[in-house]
Length: 213
Image (cartoon, rainbow, N blue to C red; front, side, top):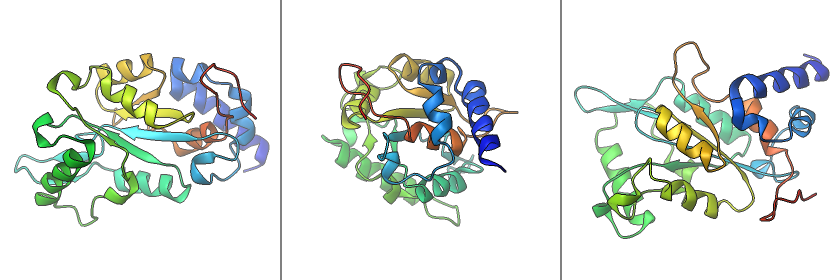
């Protein structure tokens, strides 16, 4: 595919898949950067962090309580990893699982790994310390607390959130995330990687909304 065609496809994909959220970012810069590879989340021109819900977005729980990747999830995470795009989790777990995100994440890993039946291990290392969970029951999604904490921890990076539930998509979009409802029939299972790569190359914005070069 010629470079001009690749740019045209990315432009159309941003419009078709990002909806109102995609229209809130400067698309000309996105199209121009789409053909480049991403390093460290695209920090050469900006950066992006992709957050996910966990259950029924990346992980499916079967009737026997065994757990596996959702179809296409492992491949999608590999594609983001290959482009050095950081990923994170914003997921509800019992607040009693620990007093910090790290403690609750450790307990979450135990629960998932105990019943994991997929031949491919879950890619915990991809998420690092970007796993945000409720400190209190009042912080459970769709309350805004977890998205706000993840946003604060992500600096000036542009933010993507993907979940299977419309209420979480709407809530995260209202907080400035480019939100995508995953695993819908007749739609790409996840926001296409070229769209995220394009976002990664947009310039960062500082706290006052001024574009930084």
